[in-house]
Image (spheres, helix red, strand yellow):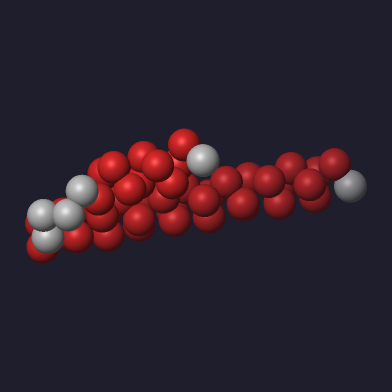
Length: 48
């Protein structure tokens, strides 16, 4: 059972890492297209 949970956790961490990198790419594209303070919004979201 613990092996299953560790596999599940590592899989979840991989998914989260991929989501984070994807959102970073998305944010860089948004930053190039617009002059909105995207960084401030992201910092506010991550700090909450």
